[in-house]
Amino acid sequence: MKLLEETKSKYHGKNIMSVVVPPELRIKVRTGEEFIDHTLGGWLTPSTCWMMSGDSGVGKTTLVLTIANLLTKQGHIVLYNGREESVYQVKMACERLGVNDGFIMGEDVFVDNLIEHARRLQAGLAKENAKQKDISKHRRVIIVADSLQALDSGKYDTGRKTKNTPIQCASALIGWAKSAKEGETSGILIFINHVTKGGHFAGDNTLLHAVDAWVHFGFDRNKKSDTFGERVLIKNKDRFGPAVAPMIVEMGEGGKLAKRVVEEPVESEDEDEDEAEEESPLSHAAE
Image (cartoon, rainbow, N blue to C red; front, side, top):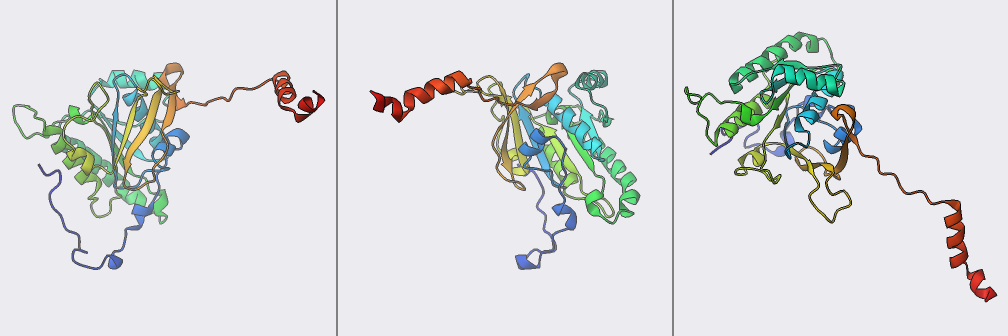
């Protein structure tokens, strides 16, 4: 099954050197949280599509709620479409996490309705962004879908879903992110995709090939690892950013996520002196 319909740009058949990259695709959108920006390669690029997966109970929703709040704090409009939990559960989670900037709450079942909601928000920003000559300061609409499996493509009137339904929904959302209308700024898409209980990607690789980046939030399952059982945030794919080392994440009070700081053991002065005496060449000479 094709995820996206075949499209050709105005540069089809021309020398690559004639391509003019839209300036806004060179913009860097940061969350402002070090451990998240590190995993994202430093930033999010407009028009990109990010897939996030995670082990059961690791804190996937906590992570995307945190990202949604941070991006709102940076001045962007985040449309959080939460269908996994009720709006009251989401609000209580925000209270627990200390969220203070918030986001726009969406509860759309059908993906076309979600996209229409996002386009209305983009239209509302068009005049404001047009007055701002510095495009790096343009506010953007960012869709955070929790989760892809909770959406319906609307293909069947009966509400029936198939294994292709998530792919159809992803196709529509990716199309939105990569086809801003005249006067609109390109959006950014982040969605949660379910994995198996073992933490492996479920289904075929259609989605993996279609998205620009994939981040997995899971538990370290390697019993020989120093971080066995801890939460690890790892980027498996990124077309627009560099490869980065996995990030060890800890969950603190209220479920707040933060980079785990590894403290080096401190040796006492007495231990240092003992080692110095044992290793000193003078001690051997005295013998």
